[in-house]
Length: 250
Length: 258
Ligand SMILES: Nc1ncnc2c1ncn2[C@@H]1O[C@H](COP(=O)(O)OP(=O)(O)OP(=O)(O)O)[C@@H](O)[C@H]1O
Ligand SMILES: [Mg+2]
Image (tube, rainbow over all chains, first blue to last red; front, side, top):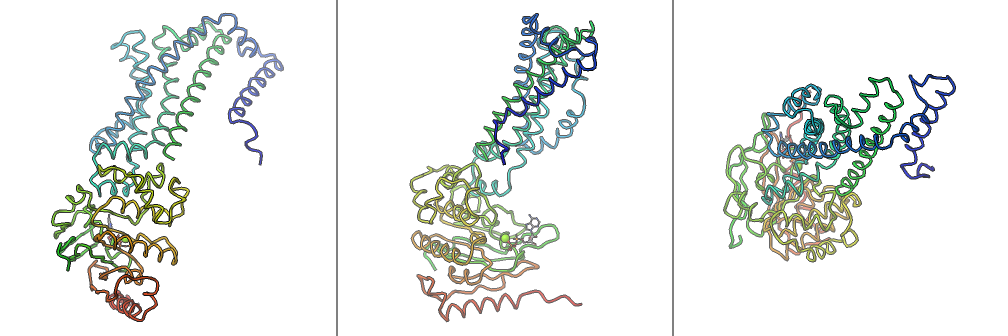
């Protein structure tokens, strides 16, 4: 079979190009009015007409994603390790950690506005909260996956706890940690856009909000395509990091 | 009896799991440097006995001492080398790294050169830098045995270490285990399903029965050492095997009424 004829990235890029071509053909063929769905070339023109605006917005969003996402992921990881190591702590807070994934974190947004005001800190705090829970739950699950026999082996030589944690439990948890990292990265992007809606001061989310209020689907789609790009790049980076990590413990 | 006295002393050990009496008042004393093998039907508590001696299973009743102290002291001193029934190699470590890692866990120098020699001596020269997934089940078990040897413990607890091996490899492994045991004078408690293996290896064969798990006989093996392949062809060997099979048969639970 020729399944590996092209490098892996070729396939999604080809799919994307195909989708854009279909979109353009659809708009031209059915004469869709631009206020409903502009032609992709129109969107490209919008981006080119005012690159500074879009670059600034994309940078603002990316900073939120990276800073808030890193803070939340790290805090989630540490929380996951703590509850993984302390079973009674896990029993105490597991229901809330899991419920926190079901409850929309966006419901806490007004509270964050009260605490942190309508600035950068609120956005960061919100993104961090979004990223924290999946990472914490996945890491904790990973730590409970250590095979009993491996722990018995360590116990048979009275291995110190930190050696067991770093040398045995952490490596066995890596696949789950990588899974958590993927979820957290995705949610950090979602969280940034949401934060820019309710903080409404900067970024691609804010641009989307303003474009919608002014019925400018071309601006909206230009901003949206950049959100997609930021998310895609982040996911790619996390995926690469994840498969590196997994290979170490495979 | 060796001048060092009992290396393992189990007195009236009882282990109960909810409604299962896994071990019912089991007593067993193993001299320092002695090689004791344990046979018995599946589920009679062999693993439970071994785990209890290794301090991995807390007894419901009775007392256990290893080198005159609680098993936990032997653990802390790195004097217990355990080979588990299930596979316990770490998939992200090579054979060599797995062997040295147990010493690191025990807080000792890893001594990789010595570990490499041991692997080569166990016929794993080509597998030194291979990962467990690249090894056959039998090779993995051999790595686990080498790992326990490399720890340098005075007491070895082995739970069916040759379980996955074919007849020929089993014999080779048994022979190399006997060699290294003779060289180092360690105490060994060795669980197996195979009666011939128990006779070939052991100074004594402990025979267990189930429901409840208990020791029904201790059979001294009257065969001179060193033993090898030829030993297994002797009439004396066949007699010993037949004697132990007889004990096992007598203690098989009666057929339920129809
Ligand atoms: N952790 C446990 N919880 C509940 N029951 C257990 C546990 N460990 C063992 N048992 C039970 O105790 C009995 C003895 O088990 P054990 O594993 O010691 O037998 P074994 O002689 O090693 O068997 P095999 O030859 O199949 O390995 C069995 O009935 C088993 O079901
Ligand atoms: Mg067993």
